[in-house]
Length: 624
Image (cartoon, rainbow, N blue to C red; front, side):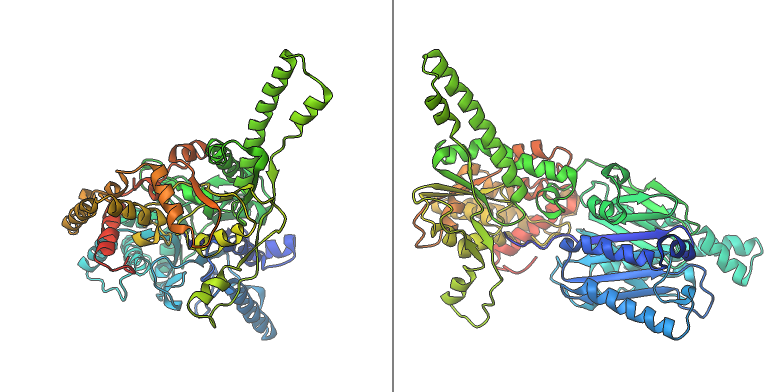
């Protein structure tokens, strides 16, 4: 229901055979490019602000381009990029270029889909980033799905060795840091092979052949604090993708004798290459997949794996629901909500309609319905037993019991996105309320209406649209169900949830503190957060937890319902959230829950949540 800009998408391909092999087997030398396009389209959900493609051609002769990059902004960036690439290839063919001379037809590819999570936009921030040099093994293409929480420390490290970054942003700084390590690796090999008597082209070829990406990653990665999958291609053809040691951000790979593929999600690789789930492997925390210039690949542990903090919100909301494990997990999230939903409707199943708010909550809806059906089956069995023991087991009585069913309807429909730029004041909200439409007659006046959503983060769409339109159906009670727990804390690992005041759960807790004369809690938290502004990140504590400590989950949920219910809504409104415990039961292998609990997986998280609260308290509502 609410669009949350989240982490980016990455895709990498390394062709292990000559281009002529793919041309003969698959009918086109553009096999790699076509697969990259498919991977990126299948990951389009992960980034709709901008996209970029990079390619490296092996064994190009001096004087010929061997590194290519194309970037574009906007929701149609992928089509724009590949359209431009196609036109460049067609033009080169018309000018008589052979297959080996065509632009972008290389052996190594990377693709990136971007969501801005830092407020910075513009082409200069679109991946892949590129570092140019006349030595092939000193060129670098860089992209990733990441956000570093210790940009200040990385900045200090690289300036201490004499570098002068152009911009203070994590991607620029990583490019400089990795580029510096790449230079050191080149210098090591230069000295080694020069001392062995190699010169000129032989020396350059030896450096390109022997470059060790592992040395570069081992030099840089220990300084990184954040959630990340960082991908690089060196101009000599070496390629890598590395995952953070807590596994916060996802990465999957597949390799055979023809190809090595890396992507942010498993099903996109399955679809692009017609694979089974078991064929695609997960890159484990702290690991890197490295493909050398000669095509040999290996998995290497760059950083020791730490406590598993794979992101739970990734499974609830961000990733494609076509992944077989995610599908099961999302259904279980719905099933786990059955006791709370039944309590909210006073167990009156006959007068309750179950629905969902389009469209990402549909799988959880199936799980909720199945769970209520299971509950109803048990109730029917007990009722039949009672009839039997009373000697009243007649056809009519049995039919009456079996006729009880879960009533499920598609109540809300996502309509066209109406343009509201010509409206002002309240008329804008009136128009916004029509972004969704309802199925008239789907419920009877006086029924309860239960509508499940995957998450309720800000609550804006509920307040401005959903509750108003559902109320038109004249339900007695509206129960809005969130398959995720209350989002209480900002993310700092690459998702656009960074300001405290955005969270309806936070606003509810603050309102409760003020109502109950407990403003001293707010003052105390501010003082503690302010006092640790200059602490090392390892010494920072998440004092924002104290804002929520005086209240139960149910008290905060009740206040959220009050804050989000617009004037004029006639139905009673209740909001039900998944509990953290039930979420973990549904998603046992992805325990990263800092959004809900404030238990950040890295020290930088505690520092940034403290900073976010200080910004809120001091009135810097738009500061991060």
